Length: 138
Length: 138
DNA sequence: GTAATTGCAAAAGATTTGCCCCATT
DNA sequence: AATGGGGCAAATCTTTTGCAATTAC
Image 1 (spheres, rainbow over the protein chains, first blue to last red):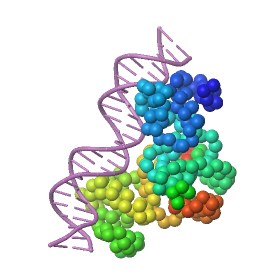
Image 2: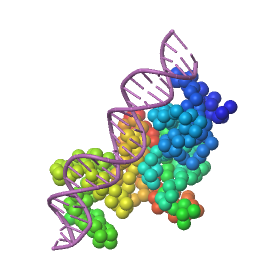
Image 3: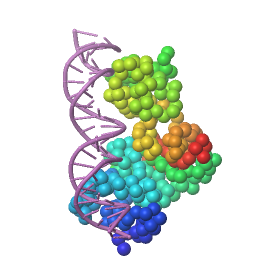
Image 4: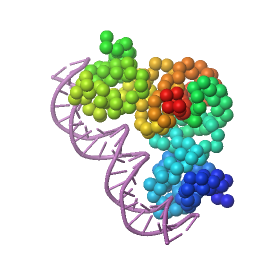
């Protein structure tokens, strides 16, 4: 099994009428193994090693599909002004270093915030980034 | 006095060697009076009514200057994939409606988060967006 | 077989930049 | 008077899209 999300992906495709392509699977697999919050360009360059003819358009189309269906989250960084992608394993927030751009996950966060904002109605997604200087850069 | 941030802006310009132009002042003034989180394009179209020859390049250059010097904050919305601008009056978070794109401020938030993440080192800025469906759209 | 998806290339959209002229200091 | 900033237009960069060929079902 190339990825343990493969079954979830298949289920999602069945429900919505899509097809399980090598491209989708390899992109999802890559993101499951890499938690560095890569950009589309970085994903493209890496996935190309396995699928030399894949195009950037396909990368974007599939990343968008996966994000819309909650397999991934999209994160916009002020550091480089690009969209970064991350497997949506759990609600968490991000620490982004203003000096080097590195992005860390900070886990166990949803309870604090979900509780705090109950009165606003249903919150589909919380995206929270802390900008500062990381320990390596200090 | 066109804006109560004018003195702060002048002080900032003195320190860094810039000049107080009508363009900077009118952009800052506009954002002080409008808390709708406009995009550069919207700011451009509105400011053009006062300064008919101002160019989009100038809008961007000045918005970037003002954001770098902490007069403004930049907010990237998933709804339209654009950068929105907001006067940096206090730490607050944003509610963004996934249906209509409206952005609300949610105030009084910094203490909770600043306290929560002390151990990560200095946090320069917290940017937190809650995505959901607003009351008008429900 | 047929309908969705890919690869490719062109287009679109947002933002930045070079250069010459004008305005602020 | 000196020079930083503005206006304009071109360039850049990221992301999207149209279309013919390919692939999954």
